[in-house]
Image (cartoon, rainbow, N blue to C red; front, side, top):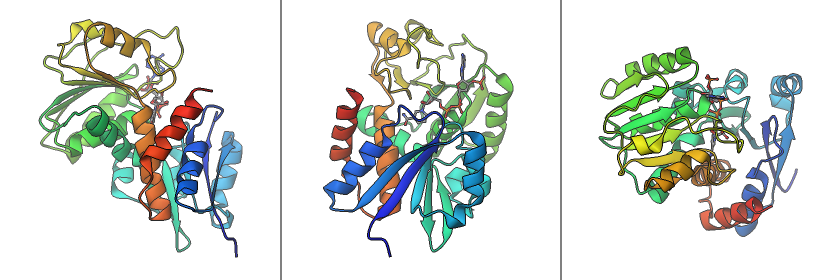
Length: 278
Ligand SMILES: NC(=O)c1ccc[n+]([C@@H]2O[C@H](COP(=O)([O-])OP(=O)(O)OC[C@H]3O[C@@H](n4cnc5c(N)ncnc54)[C@H](OP(=O)(O)O)[C@@H]3O)[C@@H](O)[C@H]2O)c1
């Protein structure tokens, strides 16, 4: 019988991941013996491992790009929000069953509310992107009672699909898809849920100066800490929020699901900050 718990993260590439240091520091602070390892796996290896889930010695794991959607079909159960979104980032093993959760939803909302001081109820939001994280963001905002959610994506059909699916789930929210460059009136919040901004030469997908001063700009990217979109937003007098808070709170929720203990958020935040310097 092992006297420790073993967790990990699957994704490709994983060179940048801050999750191991964040999770292990949280466990240490609570006196738990936990190991958390990065498993950088190519497609073939990932699928081979997932097919052998019953034999894995892991107690749970995280999943990141590009496997958040594909992991679903290997799991025994999906928690309702993960099912609605069609993506899982946290998997819990209980009684020999593997259950998929989407803690990006709670992570996003916690960051938005605690750090951005933003309550989505009755608000109009523009979401850039239509990938896994955009779906989690749109779902979270709809759950919180946003008034209108507009999606813009390079591949329009992906955004249309989300609109169709979520409009059925949330009939009280106005879902729309719009073209790039569009700036819907009266937007309270803009969320960049694309990977545009990861590279220094990436241009911002919208021009913050086109939006009212009271619009909050949030970018899910946390490295760089300030993307071009956030820099332009700050320079035009807007409040901004990067993705570090979402990373922190999605990790805190995963920790709670795995250990049954409340996560020491300040310890995790300090670990992220320290690691982020390197
Ligand atoms: N802070 C956090 O905790 C957290 C959590 C999750 C994700 N994220 C970040 O969120 C971002 C998106 O992640 P994801 O999981 O949603 O990825 P994903 O499923 O691969 O989706 C990527 C999105 O970016 C768009 N995109 C990519 N290159 C583009 C380009 N050159 N021009 C315009 N649009 C482009 C894609 O558009 P198409 O559909 O047209 O390809 C798609 O909408 C990543 O940067 C990730 O690091 C952060």
